[in-house]
Image (cartoon, rainbow, N blue to C red; front, side, top):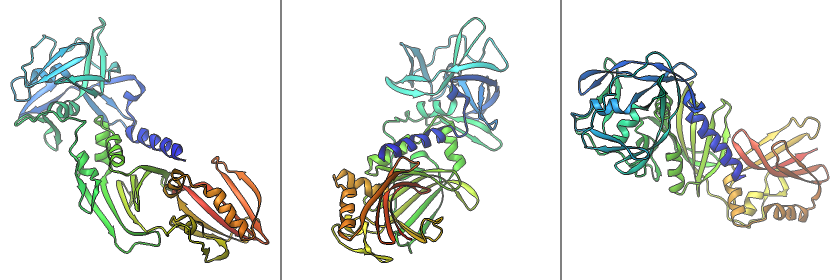
Length: 417
């Protein structure tokens, strides 16, 4: 079950990393000529950029490293470019022109190949997305994302209406060490990393539900602009940092699911706090959301109780000390039963039982048999999970794992024939 959740998580990361789909992921394609002015400390400078376009035609611009070094050489953001088996950059050191700056021996759209590589910045390796264009004589030219260079080397790159793309070098900072990000936490949850602060994305709003429901006592939804999150991904970022940060803060990945709108959500949980991360359709707008639920406490393990609607069926959650996530009644049994009641338990709690070495399958089967139910069958679902079937008179009990719209769950299904 945990391997399945991880597989789905990786699928989500791949999907998000390709929103919008970049030709770079395919390893090559066409780079489109995108020569344009960039404002550098208030002055326009023309860069011979090349752009990759996503499936919707949105461009992401790439610029030659040496062009940027040449333009910034008289500023506090100057940097030296060298080669020692890999590209090396030394910030604060003057650049030495080679004569190839601000010009190329080709024009127009051009074929490219993926040039993603490790660049040594002040002696530390940094993985950077890049593309390589080749001239007619076989000479290679490497282009990087301008925003990536700004982040790696300590100058500001941004865009504004009426200004377009601009660079500001005043008070250029030391390059950001990606291995040591600044981490802050949500005010309401001092152990939960703040997504917006981590990526520099402003919080649009937060919804608080203090009334709760039968399965949680309180919830907060932190809502972010999906386009701004997408922009981070287009600039070479990814969500790995935040997801790893959650796990480092004690929130392991426990499940994932696809909602009715087709968006995949990752589920993390620590004790009675559950965190869901992903895109959501909220008020008819696609948003990036962090859902936090304070779950109701689980009952003490070892309590022999019975379901209210089926007083001769042992309560699985009460006996194994896990909380009931949800339940529903089905009167449309397709001729197999007149009424079915499903009791639903979370993958995190089932995983905890497995981690503790609890054989809940045999344990619950023994409870059923002690209450007059006999084992009659088992079957494997389309999802690959085995369901056990017990019967007594006109009542049947089925239990096992199953994939639902809200993720992988453990179900106890009581049917009356």
